[in-house]
Amino acid sequence: MARRGKKPKGRPINGWIIFDKPKGMGSTEAVSKMKWMFFAQKAGHAGTLDPLASGMLPIALGDATKTVPFVMDGRKVYRFSVRWGAETTTDDTEGPVVNSSEARPSRVDIEDLLADYTGEITQVPPNFSAIKIAGERAYDLARECETVEIAPRTVSVHRLDIVEMPDAETTVFEAECGKGTYVRAIARDLGRDLGCYGHVVELRRVSVGAFGEDDLVPLSELEAAAEEGMEELDAEAIESGAKPRVVDFEPLDEYLVSPESALSDLYEVMLSDEQASRVLSGNPVLLRGRDAPAFCDEAYATGHGRLIALGSVEEGSFRPKRVFGGKG
Image (cartoon, rainbow, N blue to C red; front, side):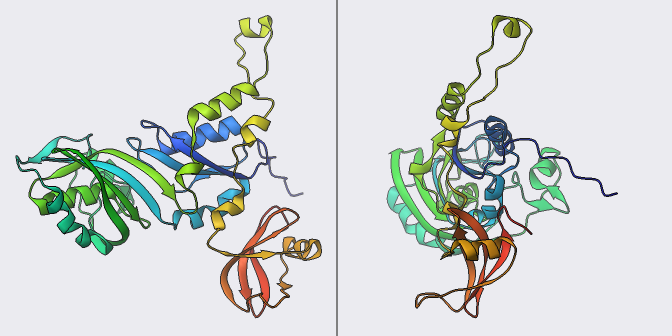
């Protein structure tokens, strides 16, 4: 007789938390905290953010985890401060200085180089990065003082602007870039080209894919919402060491963003109840209407008031590839 799998622990909730990760918190720690706070069955993030960085870490709960690749492939916007005069082993404030200079660049000096750092560019990721080398993370090898050789890679930088120059030592930039771009490498290479060296002293991610700065939710707001829904313990329970838990999730759930919000760049197929039922069973449905496309490589279907499936449109039919909350 076949054994039944264990019932997943937690609530079967689906959606995104556009978390404003504080500086000092790791991405894995943030996901664990959100999963615990929302008592979710499943959770994952859309792109690691270094502990020293703050800002947007989109965290997917439940079925929203199936849309993570679409967010990770989206453009990202970073705001970062570069301190001139020193290059470090980590290209940020964590590592010791390895090169230094008394020279400082002018705004014109920097602006003259920005065109070289936009478009398709080649960069070598920092030694202290999550890049894998022969199955090992580069930062693990670097911490063990092993020689780290990372091959150059082509990345896309759509925009690199100077935000301000508060003093002669510092320049604040904003970069809009594609997947795999390291702004620490941009700071390092700019410093070398300018002949003054440089490293990142502040880094904040303000946008990822379809999610913008206005969507950010700070930890303090989420903690306040959790506190609002916390159970009240009697004196005996408190004395025994019991810890209160969230029993009313409504205040927290107000911060959830729908799974399909991550798919704004894809074509939406709106299904009738009958069509939605067919798609939930893994079957294709014929699209009707003069605006219905004949072919579309990537599309998503909504019905029954929610996201139903990811798929494609072929010969005028929507063909599901990943179904949300249905059979298959």
